[in-house]
Amino acid sequence: MIRERIFKKGEFIFKEGESSYEMYLILKGRVKITKNNVVLNELKSGDFVGEMGVLDRRPRSATAEAIEDTVVQVLDSETLRKKMEEDPLIGALILTLVKRLRETDRRLVGG
Image (cartoon, rainbow, N blue to C red; front, side, top):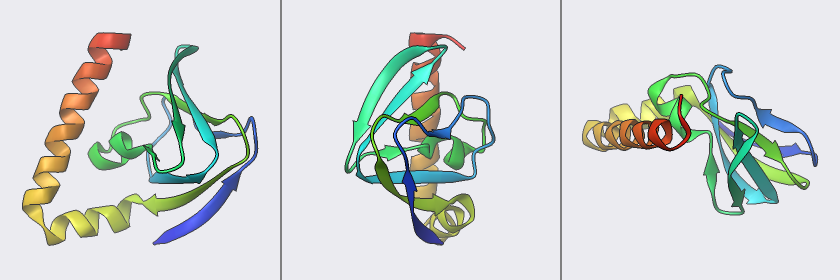
């Protein structure tokens, strides 16, 4: 199920190490991504956040914090998995890309 949610400035969307059940599409606002108190990225409208953990069922690899009032669409892992099962080739491609991103993240930041 896809729903809309608002995060206030300074509110955490998720924290590093938490379980991954949802991913988010930023509709309005900005989100800071940090790992070990190091800023990795700043995301804005049109960007996804939290997709890696939802796709490969691993804990959050970083923390996401709203740096201004932020509106997102929330996609839960069950809905996403059903879509991937409908097209196994696309599902396999997505999982391969997530694996590569995790490896790059590990090399760049450590972990």
